[in-house]
Image (cartoon, rainbow, N blue to C red; front, side):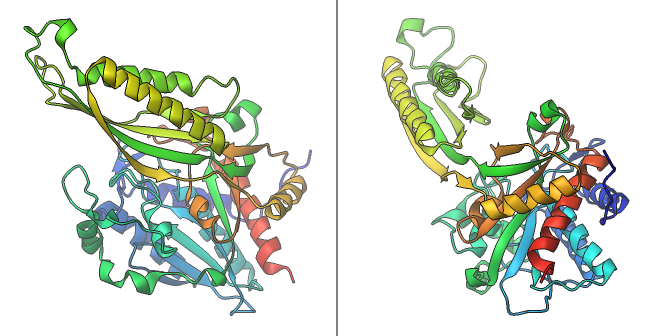
Length: 417
């Protein structure tokens, strides 16, 4: 098998990823760049300068999105858009999101180096707050740009009590001018996103890259269960209204429900839990926890949700607890465009690659873009399937292949007459 001949510069991509990874660095390999934070702003300005250095027109909109544009021959034509995000989890890695932004810039830098002007404009978006870890509501920037923010989003508060509105203003945005930053969807031809897999499938198949077939529909809930506090030494077990015991049973049941269909890609996670009053010798009165339920099959996900709600009701009655549920996110699965996937298949074959085709369990900015245009995604292998963790790692060799495939796809879609 002959080696791939690269158009992109693999060393440049790796260097730019490592430099970006120093902003908000924690430990030796970790990153913490929470949305709208000073670290996030520093990263946005760093990437903005990188865009400008290769001749892109740039702006930061009122949602905090960084946008770069390369003009095309037919400059009024709808643009091919690439992108991802550069905000991170509080305890995250250097590649999640960042690869999609740095890889997209490398594609345009390669066109710039070769003196190629695309037939249509090409845009790069580094979307604000994809992760949702600070204000418990993700995909903020892309939803804002598309006019899909929900009531009360600016009043959501982080763990320190700061509202998103305040954080945006500190970042340099003006929420009163959101209307100026809405994008005309008729100006978008298609969307491409390069991303690390964040899972173990490509590594298990010993393949460096994969072609994404679609994104699972995420359902995010917040559940609050309330009982009665009491002295841990004096209230008999049979008379307790222990909110933590009830929550523990609900959480275990959710885990079981997600595994009932053998081989299904259903996943459920309780990733955050708060106990009140959080004292060693007081029976827990209130427990708040998050639910993250995902599946590529929306009807199956909804059936599991209903079964979960039934179990929650029964366990609450059993332990004399009350409960409240708030819905934070509900999205349907979204499938990638077949024509874009076919271009990726053909270009992969030309690179001597045989990429598996796989669904994405995590959501991405592409999920929201899929409602306004065709989209495609490329995955790059993640070592040990690790992500949202400082140990997150994709090799420079795998990254180079992913960026090269993105370049070839972009060339086919935006540069060929």
